[in-house]
Length: 340
Ligand SMILES: C=CC1=C(C)c2cc3[nH]c(cc4nc(cc5[nH]c(cc1n2)c(C)c5CCC(=O)O)C(CCC(=O)O)=C4C)c(C)c3C=C
Ligand SMILES: [Fe+2]
Ligand SMILES: [Fe+2]
Image 1 (cartoon, rainbow, N blue to C red):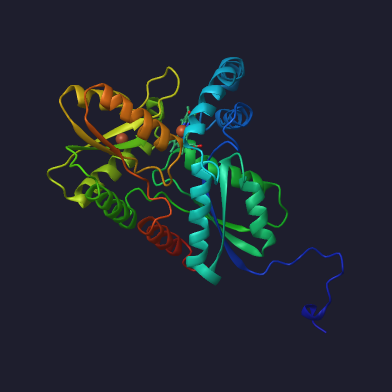
Image 2 (cartoon, rainbow, N blue to C red):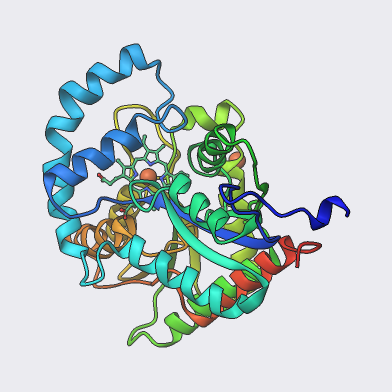
């Protein structure tokens, strides 16, 4: 009798079967567009030391004493303007992306999705993949541009989960894909299609990326350079010499200096300088969310029109459309090379 013939004892934990898992991750969102759930979400998000790089002894009193008493009510009202029957747009679209990716990968890999803050959590979903027999897992943060505040904190969270396990899965992470020809091509196709479907011809296309404190750039975070490179490659790929493209950074938070130029002030400056027709795209967001649907499509339109602009269009993110799904499938299959 060899060791392979020995029977496992009845109380032996399940032996995993060598399957491959993919965990698609995005930022996170509240469970409901109400003050309480938004406060819980913001508390987790804004307590992450990768996001707010101020020593907790100085930051926590400001967060708990001021921000969590004022912002949740205001943010909940903003979330209510974009909430859908399927819940928060960010969660609903991420779920759809995971579902479609699962169909495309078929038997090759088991796909789940998670939110870095809120639900479903990264540890719960990694556990789910392991219980489904996956002992090789690709962690796929859907951030094309790397930043410590987004990509790195996803990896930290997964590493915390691994630390607590006796039998770990093998883990790989999807690298940033800000300059990947598949990503640039998908954006060029999808943005081009949306521009052609408009009932006006924009003079300017704003490429609005999420902002970061200027200090993160000085500390060596590659985020700003990744955004600039995406914008440069996208402009070349779109090849529309009659359309002026301008890169901006949105969603400023707090009193510190953030990356510039800011999206809101640029919208006003463009209108004031005589631009009448403008479209805006958010190439750094894989999925539409509060920051695109409320901040750009609603507030941005108001800002542009109040400053004298006449026609405004906020374009959709890649979401779960064909161009975006072809790209995600391609970059994830490539990263799974050797595993599938
Ligand atoms: C100091 C604060 C913040 C940093 C740094 C930051 C970086 C950052 N964020 C995203 C992507 C998203 N952010 C979203 C919402 C959001 N972001 C901040 C603050 C920082 N973000 C706040 C306070 C919020 C919550 C909304 C609000 O109360 O106004 C979202 C949307 C979430 C949703 O539910 O729809 C995304 C996506 C990136 C890519 C990034 C750094 C590169
Ligand atoms: Fe953010
Ligand atoms: Fe840079």
